[in-house]
Length: 92
Image 1 (cartoon, rainbow, N blue to C red):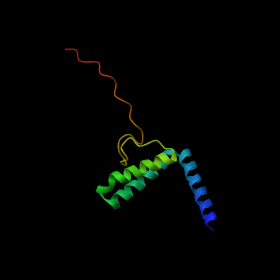
Image 2: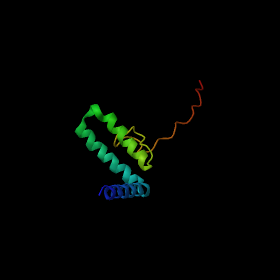
Image 3: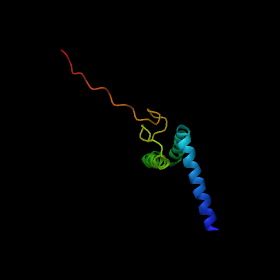
Image 4: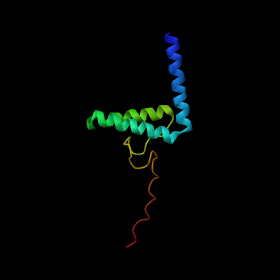
């Protein structure tokens, strides 16, 4: 019986990884919604742990990390913004 459960779990994880690879934006949004729900229940003192858990899940699924430090709805939409252009110096 345990082998059947393990096989079912492995099959489910494989399907989730395939879905995340085929639909990275939807998978990232779903993880963000779960993070928001857990944050609302856990409180602000655990927000950093929720963010780290979300990042670990994204990494395990092969998704890029969020550019907002794990905060749902933050700037960047899951993308890291490009660096600012080099300064030209001041001409006074």
